[in-house]
Image (cartoon, rainbow, N blue to C red; front, side, top):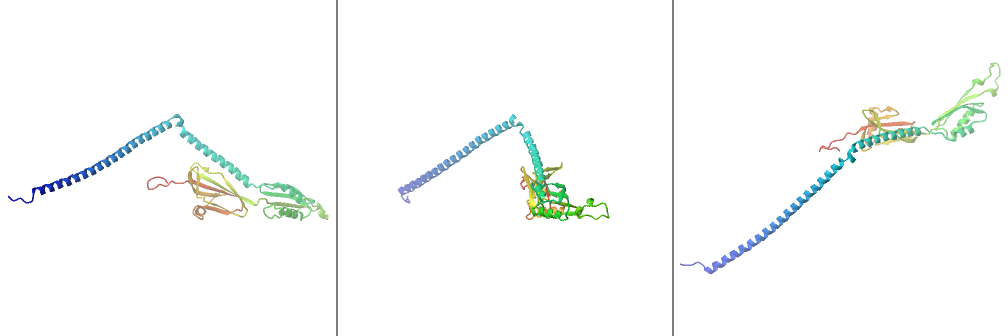
Length: 312
């Protein structure tokens, strides 16, 4: 029988095949060992994280239990009542502060006459005139008297005006005093026996007081949100308050609802103009032709809901 190829050559090829197979198996074993090692490390990390989370949760739960136990203790049992009491005390103090500032507003709007005014008036009265009545309030001076000369009252006014006693130029009112005239109509009157009554009255204050107060309108009445602030403005000058549409106090936001000036509420048209203002934040302004008392009334601002349902 004829043989194809030699037996020796066939055995060599077979050995090479098994050698390559063994090398490939060795590489696969090494790769598998690396994969197993990495897997073990990953599992170890997962277990470590799990154990850490377990102990952390145990610690957090312990802190929660301790906090609950502390809140349930006698020390914290009356905190809610104490909070309500403090809130009531804050409200009462706000009202007290408002009362003090309201009194300050009254004092500020009552101008004081110059301390040297009495001496100045005495120096301005000539020897042939005398004052029968003299009244000085915080804002006005009123003086009545009698003089022999028609021009004495004008001279008195001139001296007072020169010393800037009055806010504006003042002229006297002069009339003949009939009570000193002779009773006999046929007798010739002696010029010395003619007397004149004069009256001098004027405003002593050249400034105006602009007061501003913030109030909350509630179902039970009106509550002062702040004290009354006062500002002294020259007569005829312009005053202005910006940003009146909103007001915040004690962490609560309020929205402007109405305005009152000197006790008279603004009309809807006037309020719309004031709340619009120049930049949309609200403005109230005017000219000081006298003392002005501005009262701004607010309601609690509505809390808007976000799309997620939370408040913003």
